[in-house]
Image (cartoon, rainbow, N blue to C red; front, side, top):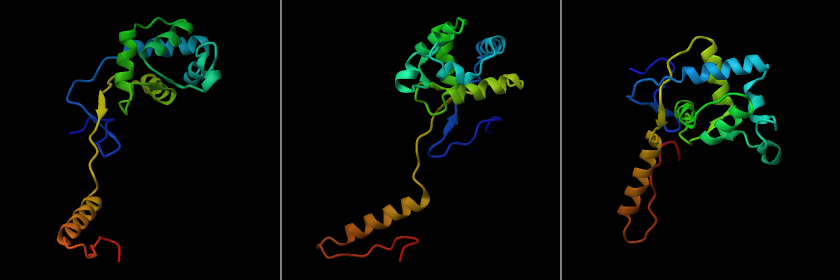
Length: 160
């Protein structure tokens, strides 16, 4: 059974791990409160040079744990590096080890709507599609059957 909010993995998606949901509610609550108090949006933390000086130079909108802690400190919120790492572990759905504005914004919105369970995601191993496997199998069989160098035609599904 896949937990609510988590999807079954496909070649480009991620899978829900067997680990229990992680509690990042304290950090998200603090971020949400700070944003309300300062009348900021999540995107402001990523695009405003006061919080993210690198944005003007390279339009950088993705943060690792150290950068998350730094940006939050500039916004007046103290989060430990461990809390930032946990945020990234839970909110980074592609496993790249970074937090982007969309991921944090979505999490803050879910938190404000009452979501308090946060599954940990990790990269799923890509699996070739059935049609691709069949094509590869047919081409490989064709090549191995034609050992004398003559051109052999492989029957590829959907192509004539």
